[in-house]
Image 1 (spheres, protein in one colour):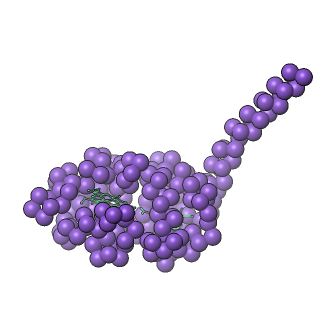
Image 2: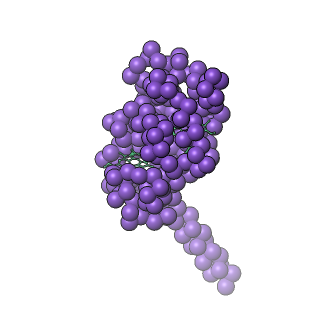
Image 3: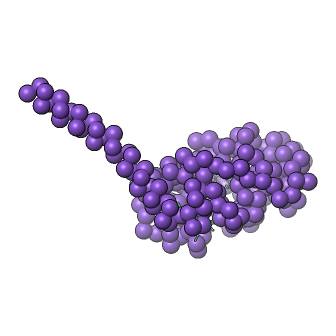
Length: 200
Ligand code: HEC
Ligand code: HEC
């Protein structure tokens, strides 16, 4: 009797251990089928209009997928892709991309790096611009509340900052990024996005 119970318990614990592995395999197959074409293998996209997802914070990926589905963040490309997905898909895809190794990116314009770094680390007291590092962290890796920016394509990041600035992207809670972006000049955007792309 005891032996049989033990065997049953072992079988159950094996099943429980197998479940997350299967979810992971499903997520990587789904990502390869539905996401890699644009976001690149493992989320290291090559074309700068497609954001890199490798190593992005999982909470942030999930939130964006949810916001694309609800229309809070508008994208004609992403909306139909997430329309039929559920919260479990979002969580599994987010965990998958968060666990991928980000490949180093590079700046297209190294002359901008010093100005971009100064803005990222210190903000701009004249315009009341807070330091990006205060939220996105000194290495640009983000944390459980703020997205990773390090290694992101300059063209994508610049497009997002312009969208926050114009109000075209309004899915940031409490208008945090819209308030930041309103204070960014076009020259400052051009500089900071180069620095972000260069961050490992
Ligand atoms: C046809 C190309 C295409 C495919 C396929 C695609 N995406 Fe996207 N994705 C985009 C574009 C373009 C954007 C940027 C949208 C914008 O301009 O705001 C984006 C943005 C995102 C973002 C927001 C990133 C950020 O840094 O804010 C996430 C998360 C995302 N996609 C996840 C996925 C996932 C997961 C899949 C697969 C289920 C997928 N995408 C499939 C083109 C695509
Ligand atoms: C007070 C905190 C805070 C500060 C300061 C801040 N950010 Fe953000 N940022 C956020 C939050 C929160 C989000 C996520 C918004 C959302 O939920 O979509 C974000 C999102 C972003 C995104 C979108 C990322 C993507 O992948 O689409 C970019 C780009 C960005 N921030 C750049 C900057 C830059 C550059 C600075 C400095 C000039 C800065 N942020 C300062 C809080 C902050």
